[in-house]
Length: 424
Ligand code: PLP
Figure 1: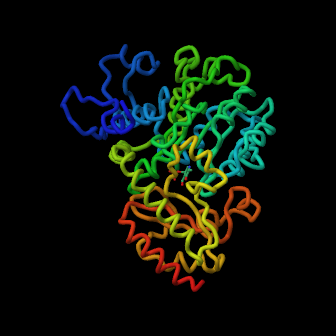
Figure 2: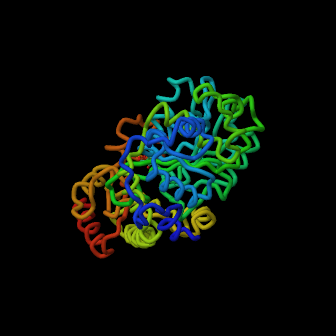
Figure 3: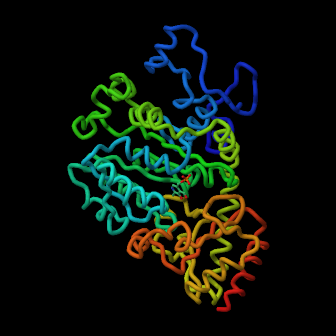
């Protein structure tokens, strides 16, 4: 099935009631048939549900659809995108190991990497830029993963995933890609060599600004068993789950099974089934919504570029943008509607624009049906030092737009009146 069809029909058939919508299984636990059945489910010998911190039937449909859309072997849903990032990285790291990452990151991911993981004994090495060579230079024998955002938020850089995956694999290291902004409809990192894909489902996939969620998708191809010393967690009996050896029992999904059995089971950032239901609703229309997002985003970027009150527009959809070749190669020329610009009047004008919008919502989300505006330097990124801001690609005058699904004329009229208010 194609993406549009998987998003609506994938992995669901309700034999019991013939329900067409995926039901919300609002239950904490499931009744075992008998003691043998309980033991087999607990030992992961038969598929089944036991306790919903570990797996829930509504969430399972979402997970299977996401795995299918990304071309992965299995997926895990969690309560937020940030939980997905943390679980994905901690699933392969131990004290004394390191992760190498591209510097253009969402602010909370940057904070996790720069300040939280080091306290847990995991060093994160920020490359000077997102080029494969710059990332490769930082990899050593203690590196357990390379991490990047396929499209950096808010920097807008597009990663050469195949080249970065190549560098990582030459060092025997998996590539983890945060594919939140691109979504699997525009880009499937696993097809280009990535080993793990993570998502904030909160954004385009949910699509309506109602629901937090995250997902981790296992590409199923990284040869963990070839590196038993580097990744002992998959090759040796795991004491955190009664001695299971993930490589032996789950050769195609060792990574995500361990993430569920150890990360989710013991740390518990569970996605509620009601939220999974809302995210499934969003997923059904993702491909259709993206068409309008992309077209509205393109119209807004062109409008801004031709306005003398605007100093710069960082929109990789433009043919002369430095990353446009990558947009063509990885996104089929379709750039999502999240991008940044700066005003001729600098920081002050940026704040005035932010204050003057009427249709755009002033908030720190993206990928909503509604048009959204953010001023990263004073909101999401306000706790970052000047140096850290430069690292992740945020300038003080930067305004970030997430262009929604409203009529394009209403969107442009709002931008025009807000630009007028800047006095530039
Ligand atoms: N990754 C990216 C690229 C994001 O933009 C965000 C949030 O903005 C996250 C991860 C974190 O997602 P959540 O807000 O669902 O925790």
